[in-house]
Length: 413
Image 1: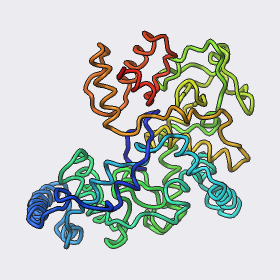
Image 2 (image 1 turned 120 degrees about the vertical axis):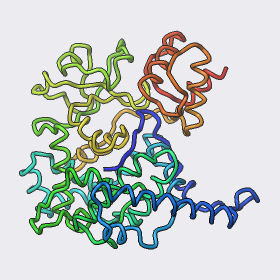
Image 3 (image 1 turned 90 degrees about the horizontal axis):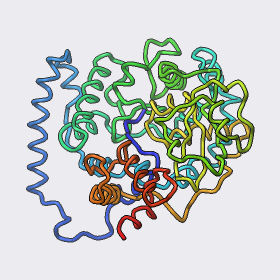
Image 4 (image 1 turned 30 degrees about the vertical axis):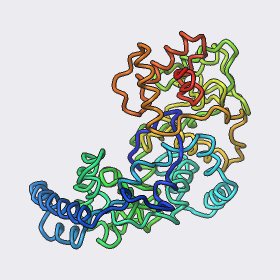
């Protein structure tokens, strides 16, 4: 489970650019040897302090020596932190890059041939297709679990930057994993953010939710399919997964629909949404869902597809707090059973804002026009969406709360 807070519409991509070396360097782009040496010296000083603190949290000296032997600062971690995929790609591109024929076919084959998926479903009551979809998106069905030293990555995050608290908390948890002998030091690998194993658990999640499904006395989410997939099911079950319902489905909204109602903060019984004119697109809304609580979601504004999402969608969001991610998991799971994806076209001529700087600009412009939204922090939260809707209403526009390039241009005029 990766640690991210992603907005509904800001799902834009820069990772390949930010993580690659630039084609040329200007003089001020070239780091000096003295600056590098100073940073490393400061890091080692910080590390010594962290070690002292870790001993007060129950970490023994042998574990600390093992964990921090020859550890150095990893400057690429902060670069990657500022260019996460969900922050940098339009949602339609994010989906199309993952809902591929290859991913779908592989998932279908694994659902037929991998008995542990059905065993895990029977044990935890979590749909095997959802588990397979998470397995696919997180690691390509176990093929890419990451190769970075988790201790080094987390120590770098904890040392400085915008995620110091996260890094310190996860680093301490990773030390407990080592001390518990769940994994050898050399095998404690994962992503730059410390996500580990075939379904990418962060260390605190691992400590709380990982299970030993194959009963070998190790919670091995790295090399054991059984442990990795069961741990994912364990997490979803404890996140209120309901085995009686799906995640949701694409829907069609009536012409007179109040787009201000399309927000995850607004929940109504499915029957109430139906009375308002909401109906299924490719298939009817099942009658047994009438009393289930649901929200209507417009991830790309009123011109894009609409979705009615149930409580299981929120369970997926607890696994990864990204609307794009949760939709991908739901749609990929459906595709294993013959689902055809999204039927309504995406508004590709009106993409979401593509950077934190653009969102900050939007927030400052809204504030200047008298729309209160708190700090201009580059993150589209509930207050920013409310301000966008208020502006849209005043401009006699559909109040869908979509932070788009067209909206930004209208504010600049």
